[in-house]
Amino acid sequence: MKKLLKKIGIVAMLAAVTALGLTGCGGSSGDEDVIKVGLVQLVEHTSLDQIRESIIDRLEEEGYVDGENISIDYQNAQNEQSNLQTICQGFVADDVDVIIAITTPATQAAMNVTDEIPIVFSAVTDPIASEVVSDLENPGGNVTGTSDIVSAEQIMGLAEEITPGYETIGALYNSSETNSVAVVEDLKEYAAANGLEVEEAAVTNASEIQQAAQSLAQKCDIVFSPTDNTVASSIATANQVFIEAGVPFYVGADSMVKDGALATYGINYQVLGQETADMVIEIINGADPAEMPVRTMEDMEVYINSQTAADMGIDIPQAVLDRATDLAKEDL
Image 1 (cartoon, one colour):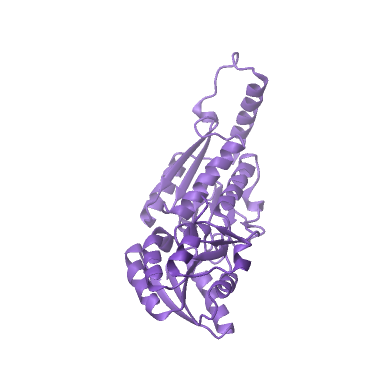
Image 2: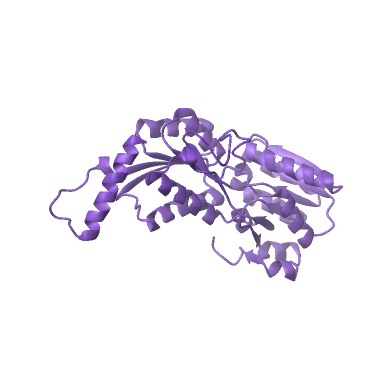
């Protein structure tokens, strides 16, 4: 943190000098004056890509331009845990000032290699259950960030509006993703309280998605997936199975709806990325991550895919249309 604070002063001074037009009489800053950010992402798919792009865009909007006063080293782990560890070790060896970790596994990998470099996470659904922090209000240590937690109950309420009368809910998720398990437990509690059944199809990798989806399509009235990275990375495969079988597919992320699922009641991942970037900027400006509460997204929105609905012969009720964003017609 001391090294970062020193750089903060240098970058602020340079910004002031530039603003005054005093550019010809003091030499130029070296690479040692540039704030170095390591950005690690578990895997590339629409949801996580949207977060990353929003982070970078927001940083630039606030004056932190990659290649100028900030250097962003983006690394994609290709959904391999061993890659995450190697990437984060590289960040420490490169002496980065801040690590941005997108997803729980990426955050855990960063935590395994440093307890000094500030870590700002994004898309960690349940930071406490995944042992990323012990207290959302007072994280302590060097880790804080943004959560993408969603409510299975609220999404099932939306499902009842769009496709009422369902009795059996399929749960498609990766059982090794702590966040997904937590949301599926929420789903099972909701189902038990409302006399519904849950059929689980837990996968361990993307190659199992098609078979799991086919199994659920034969047993269930609707299917639900949380913000699960394995499902999201193979969303096209799952969508094809459910559309052909006529089984509505509800999900946890707006970007999964953009990619063809029917609907969700969830967060805006662009806003999540912006909030994450804002926390990074606070740390760059001297804030202590130990004292920065984890941010959860309070503004939830309804997202639908009208093309998927049309392909399945589903009429979206007007009451839903009136408050929904149709991602078949808009770019994320």
